[in-house]
Amino acid sequence: MGERASYLVVFLSAACLLLPSAGWADLVARWSMDDDGSGVVVDSSGNGLDGTLMGDAHFVEGLFGQAVQLTNTDPDNYFNDDYVEITGWTGVGGTEPRSVAAWVNTSYVAGTHQTIVCWGTAKWNAEPGTQFVDFRIWKGILRFETLGDRVKGLSSVVDGEWHHVAVTITDDAYLRDDDVKLWLDGADDTDTSSYGGTGYPIDTIPGIDVSIGRRTWSDQTLPDRYFSGLIDDCRIFDHELSAEEVASLAAGVITVAIDIKPGDDLNSINPNAGGVIPVAILTTGDFDASTIDPATVQLEGVNARGKGKSGKYGSLEDVDGDNDSDLIVQIENVIEWAPAATVATVTGLTWDGIPVEGTDSVNIVPPQE
Image 1 (cartoon, rainbow, N blue to C red):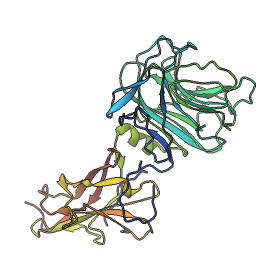
Image 2: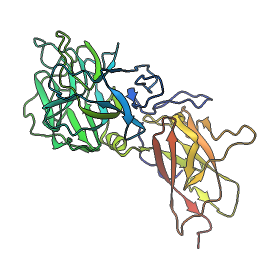
Image 3: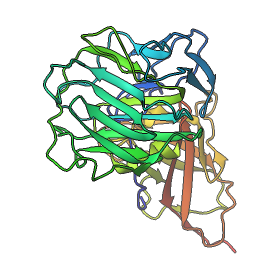
Image 4: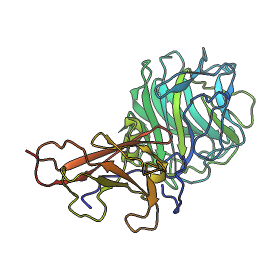
């Protein structure tokens, strides 16, 4: 096999069926904000953490399919009511690592605070660092806090355009800028001067259910910090996303490891030989190849070929001998290779419609004129 591409995303034990899944390692919940006709904010992670539209929250055209529209005319006011509630789930707690990512679009500049996602125990008299997880927009920039301290971003996101936003938190983190990172459109946007001390340890006590679009208090009846705008593709992870993973989410493409012609270290291809070219998309510690729809896989723009009478486009096999299931497909050997081609690109979609892409070296024999 040639040099592998960098990779992101979960492994699955050997299986014969290609089942839909969310694709990312340690993905606890993902709300694509697409209406399936039920009116429910469906969690596609497989964990059943569906959300409920509250107030006048509703589905509208979004960045990827649909999004949820929250129209709160005064986000700092206690008497708004548009948000999404994940009833019965109190989020990732304790000192565990975690990450939150979403696409947001807001032009509301009057409100000082607009919470994107919040959970935890919000009590005025609680120990600092043990309270809520509040990821929000504050005076136009990103901010993360537990009551008592905060880390903030640098750049404005309040411009009526779509932005990918994320917060990543290490294991046993303190509320400081080396343990908590804020990300805007795939880049680190953390203000390293936002807190100069050691910060409080983050040890979230479960309390309120997860809310998307508002902050709530477990010892009061007055929620606040309502979001006003659009939220799309919101995800919660129980690990700290790497810079590469955040960039991949912001780009809307998952980078995968592939092996063209498994077992052939040179990946030699004779365009005149006919037949098929086997291509494997590898399951790694970060990616589950069974999450890919094999019918969408292409090598240099040529589609995978269905097998015989079954019409199946791929199978799960342990191609690289690491005791997990990789996806292998067959590509018709009809590619028109560029002169002196040495690298080939494989593309496809997960069952959730997320683009994937990977590259591997090729050796075209004889070289193309």
